[in-house]
Image (cartoon, rainbow, N blue to C red; front, side, top):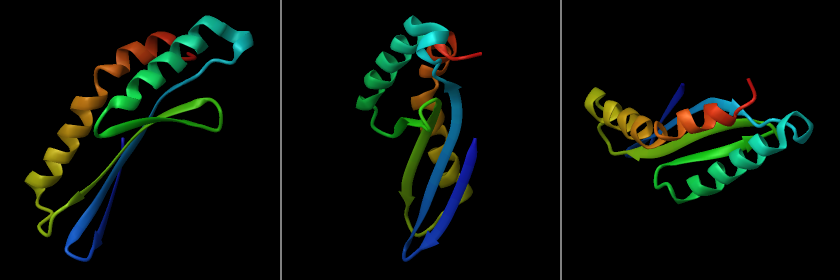
Length: 100
């Protein structure tokens, strides 16, 4: 997981992202490819994290939030837990269909 913090006017932007898999090409496994696209479409309803496709094959999970004036360790840990809690159920499903 990559973490980026940027301090701004009265708030801190917190961004996290990680590569969680690769979509197989159609010739490699069209069924797994279709399944992964269905999972990604289903994840659009998530409130905090977004699964995105990069360069046609890599699947990234991304998260961005604004932390108030005091970016304390507790506030940062809450953001990390929120990110992990929302993406975690998707990881075993994506790994099942992801390109190995």
